[in-house]
Length: 233
Image (cartoon, rainbow, N blue to C red; front, side, top):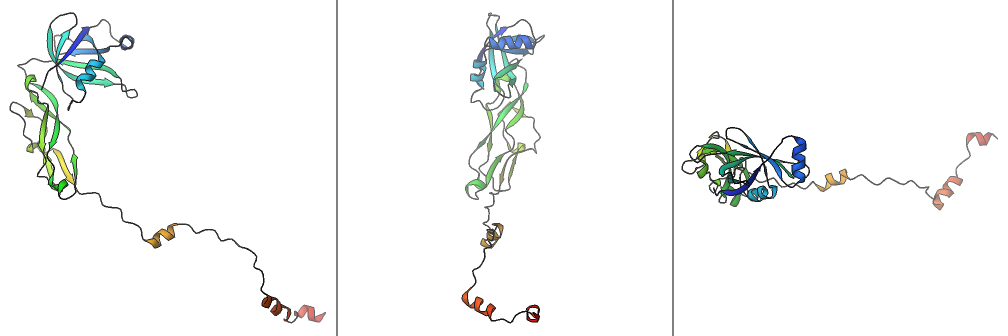
């Protein structure tokens, strides 16, 4: 993993009001852990976003240099906090590391190849596990761990045990945990029969109008005998 450069600056004071003031000034509050005690610092949010842009996985190895010239330190980004609405960077947690001590970090999983189940069977490739927990020295943190999916057919599952980590890197996840699967294609929606569609569509309301009697109906009515009541009269 390539080491990125980041300049940091010590800060005085903590708390929400101090953090708000710092953000108004164009910097972001941060904390550097791993030493004798945590160090309160500030960082340039644009520099941090530039470092993480386009990077797979959540771990970045940094070469920190104090603005005051106190000397360089090696660290990794442990946590980034963003505003849920504006997505603005709010806070950064850094952890100091040493080249001779193994650390636990997260590394991206990268599918390699085209699965036969996708190519020949029209299946769907599903990446179930996007990151792996690994243990290694800071200087050999891999940028990613490849997952060869070329032989997967529909119904196959690639597990953690099937992955091959670089030398000196140990994967900590459960060996039986699923990483990539290939599922059947989604069934095409069957068109409803015409009769069913006709039943589903409500019929237009019937409009009742007075029917004009035909001439023959009028003649037949006039030729009928009078009712009993009228005959008595």
